[in-house]
Amino acid sequence: MDFTIHCLRYDDIVHKEDSMRYRVFLTTGFFVQAKNVEKVYMDDGKTKTEEFKILRQCLESEIEHYSDITKAKLIFMPVCVGKHYFVYCINLIHNRIDILDSIDYFWAGTSPKPHHQSIYDKLPIINAAFQKVTKDKFSQFDNWSRPFIDVPKQAGPNDRMFFLWKYMEF
Image 1 (cartoon, rainbow, N blue to C red):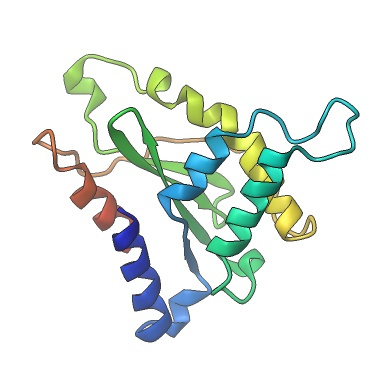
Image 2 (tube, rainbow, N blue to C red):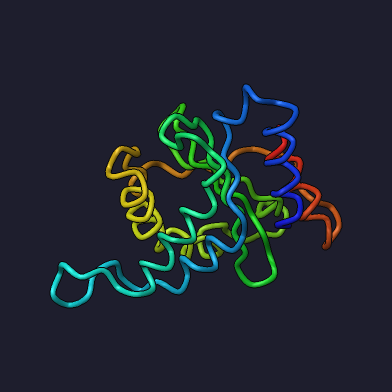
């Protein structure tokens, strides 16, 4: 998955300079690091936790090729929970977090909410990292709506990576 992210970044930098400032692609490592952060501050309420400092550094590393992330319109964050991947898109055009998920929960007879709760729980920490990196210039997104976007669904059990790549590409 991360190789695909690097290819999309490279394509924007080399071939699509207009969209380089429009779309930002984070690797799966960013959310992996976010999962390790339990809280932003130590018990004193002022000192940042070591895990949060590492997350901030990870985000800084992820966005180093983008001149000003506050001008981005779409930030794609691939997420892995269990064995399934989805894309969370911080949509600054519509002030919402679009969830791009290739599983057809309707046909599976399940609800998507339990699969996504662990991600919802990390959004305040992810938001805090964006605020820290941009010196509070980035939009607060942790309480934005999180609609499930109607996207093509995978038929086979191992098609998810292809779908995620296509979701982010277009």
